[in-house]
Image (cartoon, rainbow, N blue to C red; front, side, top):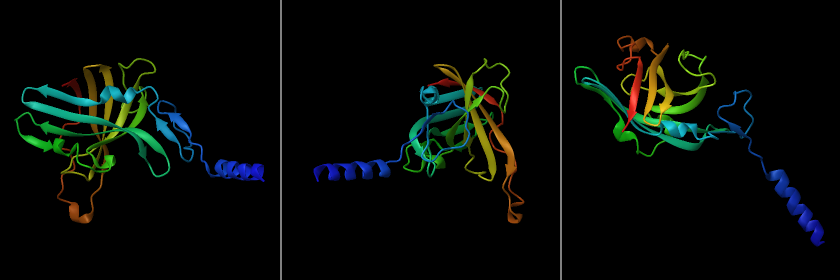
Length: 198
């Protein structure tokens, strides 16, 4: 009888357990298995964590980037970057400042910068000076005053104190008939910024 109970408990445990597939984030994305965890197995995302600053005269871009482990994408999981930023234009006017939201308790995808997709040097935007096999990281980027403009940011690791961040609009603008007077260009210039760790 004791053996039957042990066998029953073992069978229930085996049938109720769902194995989780760990997929290295640098691996090509294909069919996503249920319960997959896209893990930053070599901690590459850590290179982008911190406070970063670009300055050219009066123009400044400051970003605070953090890393979230095991972010839930409703059935699959991934390590991601999330963050906030401040942009001061060449005239010295602060156009965007979301830095005070970095520690606000919220879903990480609601931050101005969120997600982490590993891309190779031949993917959009192509990187002509990247080394063979070099990875960059693409995330969503949003302007809180122009959420109707879909934007991304591509991070490139240079060294422990320098990264490059290319901000660009995807060309998709979500406007309804009542939104005809909304701007169709982002407030922050769509260029590549060389940023220094603070």
